[in-house]
Structures are given as C-alpha cells and as structure tokens.
Amino acid sequence: MNNRIPPPLVATLFGVLAWLAAEHVSGAREFALGWRLGLALVVLLVGVAIALAGVLSFRHARTTVNPLKPHAASALVRSGVYRYTRNPMYLGFAIALTAWSIFLAWPPALLSVLGFVIYMNRFQIGPEERALAGLFGAQFTHYCGQVRRWL
Picture 1 (cartoon, rainbow, N blue to C red):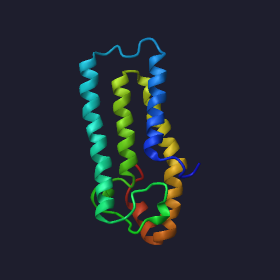
Picture 2: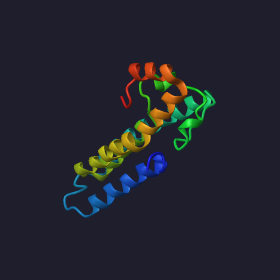
Picture 3: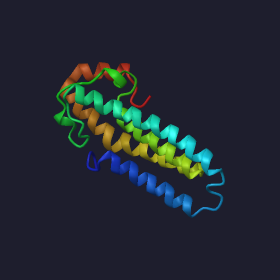
Picture 4: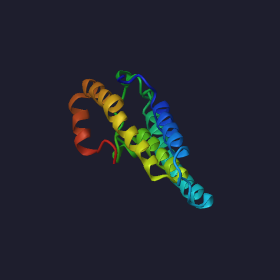
C-alpha cells in the first residue's frame, strides 16, 4: 500500500467515512448551520492556502508534485512553507478534514483527521522520506532535524 493511493483520494475517503458515521448518529449537527458553515469555511481556507503554498513551492523549484513518485524529486525544497512543515500539502488536507468535521458538528468525526494522519505517516510519508533520504542523503537528514513532519 506504500505510495499507491493518491493522498487527495485518501483524504476524501476519510471524509466520506466521517460523513457516513455522522449521518447515522443521533445528535449530530445540533449546532446552528451558520456557525458551523462560517467556521468550517475559515478553517478550510487555511488548509487550502497551506496546501497550495506547498504546491507552488514545488513548482517554483521545478520538482515533481506527484506523491506517488517521490524518487522523481529533482530538488529538496526547504523554503517558503517548507521552513515550517515538511508536508504542507498533507497538512492542508488534514486541516480540510478538520473543517469538514466542524461542518458535520459531530466531535467523533475528528477521528477522520487522526485516521488520515496515521495512514499518511505509515503509507505515504514514511516511504517518501526513505526515497528522499536516498536521493539527498545528509542534506535531507539535516532538514528533518530542523523541520517537523507536520507542525
């Protein structure tokens, strides 16, 4: 399963699972729609901005944004948003799932965020980091020592 499923699809699957669970539980969505929608949109915009900042940094460095082929990376990006997180695109997806959980107004929906993070750490980020360590060696190891995986 390593690097086999595109991360946007993984995030979508966790979001659908959260929605299905919230739909079948009484008490979900007791909060006013306006409050939920407003807060969810603000959180979603933050997630989208972080993810897009990661994509733009990769584009600027002229390296691949394809998460299924980390061995094709041509540059180790350490500038921009990558000074704060090694995985801004995945962080953006996790924040978007948080926004979705807020909209669903069912606190256990936040488990979808936890599930996403656990899955990404095991099946996406771990293999990516091994590939990047093989490509960039000590430079990547030093970067990992300076910047956290998520935040």
